[in-house]
Image 1: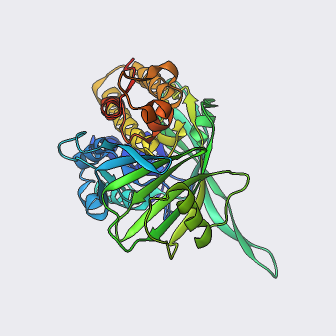
Image 2: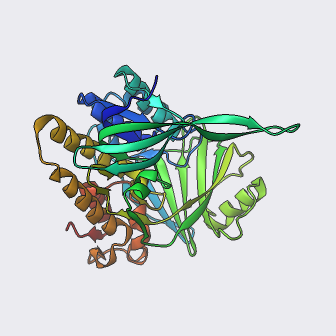
Image 3: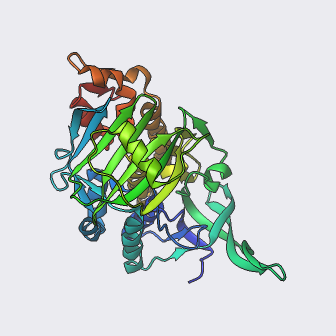
Length: 402
């Protein structure tokens, strides 16, 4: 299937947010195309937790049932300080239909979304990379490179990617969901501002003999944030924040030492590592979130800490929001100013999440551990908007609604 030279909406990036944006648009009858610079979807990734709100949005498009069957329900997030369990967030009250956080691999989510897109006649154009774009009064002119592998060298050969051809695409609007290194964000001249220090994690998936239960566990060590996720199929995942200048070797010995020193309450010795990766999370926000007929969603517009999975989940909500606004503009004659307000709303939300300042407060009677760790708790809470306020209230914290 060839990339068409014109469409109503071009979505760049076939991660969860881009796939959901394309699916939401296709469901509304919008002529949408989706491109991605990679040659296939993810096989391993850090993202794995879906908020109840995201599950509700997925369910409305028929994309939740298969995913739920593959995942694990997490009903609470426990907090540990100094080796002691000091409190927890009850995750069962956010949504009646989905009273849990769903833990499932990003690859499973992408496969489900891709399958739903195919049912609607929309395929993914892999190996297509955005080179440049220009937004005008009547549309967006996008130059897209078709990438191909080439074999070079003699007598020792190796393969590398190169541009096979450049395709000029005319779209009424563009949704940039092409992640941290977003070419769309760069193309509109949006800044990617730092709003906090970066965090580097070493991540281990491993088999566990006992059922890992339905509680995720956030561990606040003096100099690090850490999290234990229960997964399906007899697996668990530890993520430890580490010094990026001297990361530990990903050995069983070092994994067990990290567990012993940071989570002495954890029972049992880990005997095998299925998968390991080293990943860095920054605290960044695009400003603005769009320009003219080009808008950003997901990691192209924001990055935050990993524990609460806020960036991906809010990104899915952003994709839904953009699909509704673009459909109104394209089919119902609504004002393009809807996109200006989208950008303003995203800026306000993410400034508060990434750098809350005095907007995040402890209520009278809040436990000492919550007062002392309020800024750590905020990015750990797996929710946004009203649901986030409700979760924070469980441990005596509040975030200004305005």
